[in-house]
Every structure is written in structure tokens, then in C-alpha cells.
Length: 136
Image 1 (cartoon, helix red, strand yellow):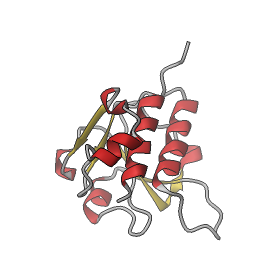
Image 2 (tube, helix red, strand yellow; image 1 turned 120 degrees about the horizontal axis):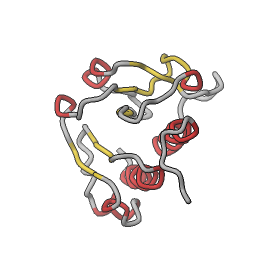
Image 3 (cartoon, helix red, strand yellow; image 1 turned 60 degrees about the vertical axis):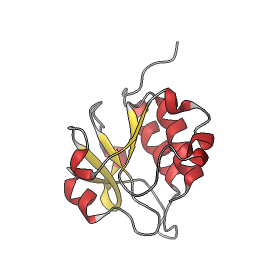
């Protein structure tokens, strides 16, 4: 929902070497505010909007507070990572498409992280497991 947050996610994806960013809701990933938040990195990775049914193949790991702790998992390079909104979480359709629900570590007194923070933590976990390209 937050256009600036969506732009930050695109910057993170480009920086970590993720294949791309796909939105499945109503947010236009090419909205001028998203492009500004992405700091021009829309052209450094794939950015598009698709229906859940049109997502590319690969195991889908969906972030959800009820999922298993991400620290015990290795995310494969062909994984799709799904994030819901802070208010309502994953859509029922995206949750149904998920192969695994995974959770970020969070103290019980904290209700959620914002989208860009969740994406950054998840991509860092992926890169620490060897999934990101090495920077020379």
C-alpha cells in the first residue's frame, strides 16, 4: 500500500541480486512515487504486476507470523518470497499458493515489521546462506 516502501523493496531486490519484484495487489509498481523510491533501480531488475495465478514457478515461501522460524531454513535460489501487508497479512489466494509459511524473529510485544524491513531481513538471510551473488 505504501508507494515509498514498494520503491525501497525494488532497491533491496536490485542490491541483493534478486531476480525481480512482482506485486499481486492493486499497487502499480511503476507509479512515479514507487519509481522515485526505487532510485532508478527498476531497470536493474524485473518489476511487474501479476495475478497470483500468473506467478512464476518455484517454491513459494510466504512470510507469516505463524510460520516456521526462517533462521532454520535455507532458501533455494529459485524461491519466490511473498510478503503481505502489515494490516491484513497475506491474501487468502497467496497463502493458498504458498509451499511454506516462514516467520522472521520478533518479540511477542511487537506486532509487525514494515515491508521494506521484512524484505531486507529475508534477503539478508538468503544471502547469508550463499544465495546472493558475491560482490568483488
